Image (cartoon, rainbow, N blue to C red):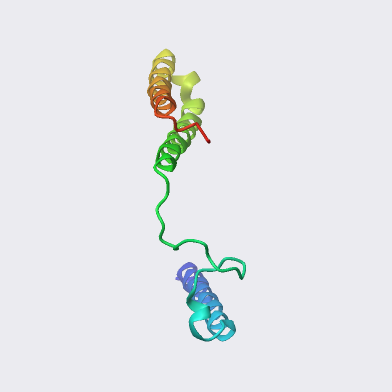
Length: 115
């Protein structure tokens, strides 16, 4: 029961800290419509806060996620490749080939052109 008491006290401390940050924010926020605008280092925003992104950023995001998932799967693979054998090497090369197909597709679509 003592371990749960420690967890409960930590959660209470966390809740108090979050409530404190919100209270300080409410106390220090400027009054009126100035306090509800988007924060841009004190400057007025040039565009709407909900403006759309250019379509090329979606392809860049997908390429990033592909390489992120590669690292998620490569680390456990590297730990067991010596124990399991050749089958894991073949599977990893198939996985990397699939990722390479995604990179080639993104390249063909112009996701890597920054101009």
